[in-house]
Amino acid sequence: MNPKSESITAAEQPGVAEQSAAEEVVSDHVLWDQLGIFGSALCVAHCVATPLIVGYLSAAGLGFLGGEIVHKLLAAPLLFIALLAFVPGYRRHGDVRILSAGLVGIGLLLITIFALEPFVAHGVETTLTILGSVVLIGAHIANWRRGERAAHQSATDTARRR
Image 1 (tube, rainbow, N blue to C red):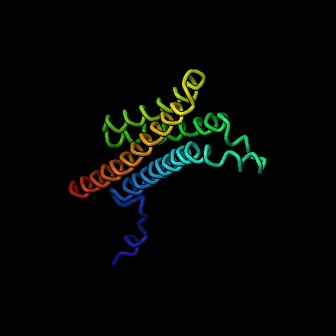
Image 2 (image 1 turned 135 degrees about the vertical axis):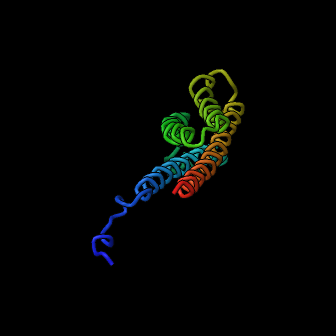
Image 3 (image 1 turned 60 degrees about the vertical axis):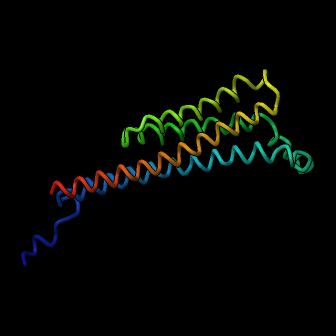
């Protein structure tokens, strides 16, 4: 056996470097979807739990957690995470329905939190915020699954071409 052939790195092997780069991009994509799911679930938990425990929060000196500022502080990272998940996800799988669902979810959250808050009853605001978060969670899950399928299909297509 030729000793030189044993020292070939993964980057020198045809297709291996591309597959490894694709796996890294997919893992980043999955991370953003996971963070988006977590953040949106945190938003739902905040909306549901705050009215139930507002007295306890105040007694513990954490009354600010029941304020609207928390929604505003959660919205910025959710928007950033959504962009980092849905834009590359759409480029990978091309499913406009998933991108649209993500935009609807984040749009509903932003409009409710920043524009409708002074004009609608608290119960309506809470309902719309929860709805936006649930839509975002569903879009992140679909984006994650579809992205992994697209990556798998791409790897399969690459293997067939060899």
